[in-house]
Length: 299
Image (tube, rainbow, N blue to C red):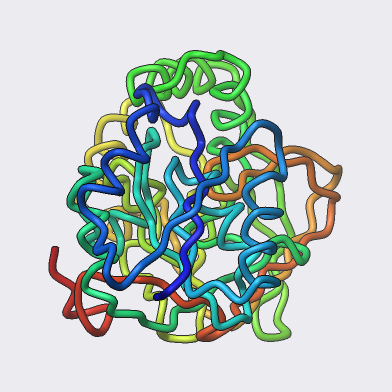
């Protein structure tokens, strides 16, 4: 029997995860897998439970929740042989969408039964792991205000984005890429291990989780008439052709801004110092997937 721990966030997204044990018992193959449960009550629980799974020799961890829950569980599994299974129940579900893991809980649990495990990259922001994206500027401010609102869901996120756009002031940054520095005023600087924030908003549309590199998207300030074009290009995976967007790819990036401030990691806001470094860690996380190879995944 392969031992699994299911880490459940009962407050993820807009749904209710009360029926998770019954659904797991119905779908996950009991002849091959033995599932135990842990429930998140406070920040840090997901990582702590994942570390428990590593310490007790578990085969895998099932993260039932949003991108924050997935990030927490993954952070406890990096650079180990314990694999992560993603059951998306959040607002954005960026990692699940990138890896074509079904968004319905029943479909995601069936991925566990396939028992196909791949090695993927993870990245760090000043040593803090992220699986999908991190960033500074406008998107970090929206993430901060979205968390304060208390009401989850994509409509709330859009509402906060529209409100913040009216008051947000772009900053100037010094960016170091492969030992070369340049200074630029930016509306957003986003880093992608995966291609999207979530909700199919592709901020780094060509990012791969198996290339050993991190993608960076720098969006220069733009006028209000360009907002609809920017929004459409984000969701149609065409942001890279916009005239105010520059994209880069490297093993690491260093950014200097003129004061500490908010950033986001996989959608969750975090305070960071003025100087930050983003680094890719190749093949450092094992994940249950619906198929073999990132470019051949099928639900």
